[in-house]
Amino acid sequence: MPIVSAFCKKGGVGKTTFIGFMAHCYSSAGKKVLIISVDDQNSIFKVFGVEDKIFNANDNYLEFLLANHKDLGDILIEARENLYLIKTLNSDKLSLKLTLERSQEKILKKILEEYNSYFDYILIDFPPSSSRLSEVLLDLSDVILLVIGLDSLGLGGFFNTIQYFIDNDIDIEGIKYIVPNGYSRNRRAPRISLEKLEKQAKEFTPKAIVLPALQERSVIKNLQSEGISPFDDIKMASSYDQTAKEALLEDLKEIFSHITL
Image (cartoon, rainbow, N blue to C red; front, side, top):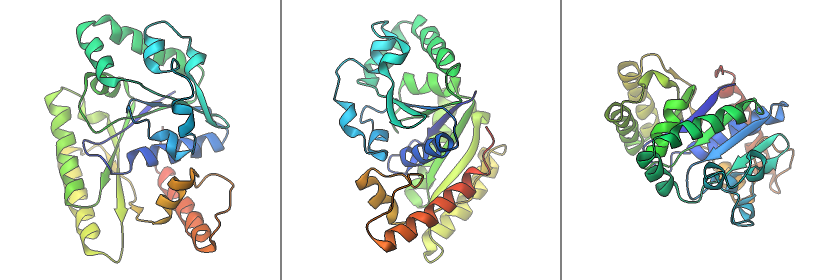
């Protein structure tokens, strides 16, 4: 089954939120899904309202599995039915170990292969910073999603990401989909940014599919603050937020329908 990475060389573009919603969509359909966070902030836990589980044990991190101090099941943290998370403690230290000990790449690959036999999908959430860990995992990914914010800084993040791939000899053709995020019909800047992104994608990632733009919706922040996903069967306290949540759900379903894994 595929290993799917959500990446961008710019923070705050919504890739953690997007990969979380995507995972919950698949798990809600009965698929077994694993999200591996290689971001030390482990923000993916907040998407599901389980951030208390980040610190409820001090030895169930990915690093302990790589060091052979834990078994595969020991570090899995359940966030929803059929949906599990793995957290990291110190990705910089992990990256250094991968750089100094080349055998660690084989160990990491073997771990992913073993998880792949248990899960239908493995999704990886990255930080925007560069690291050897990111390079290795991007190389091992079957599908890479670039989540790009629809503003001038977001477009800069797209260029930085392409340059990062070139500089580190990561296959650009691994980028299968581009997710424009933060679109608004009533604002000029996102519309222009989307047009520019589509042109740039044709030039730099001609084999990637630019997905329908995800609308900018204030309800996303409200959902995050309460640890609720649009795929949770939970009603929002505000009728306005509930309507917006339902609209967001339809937006996401439409976008995910264009993704083939």
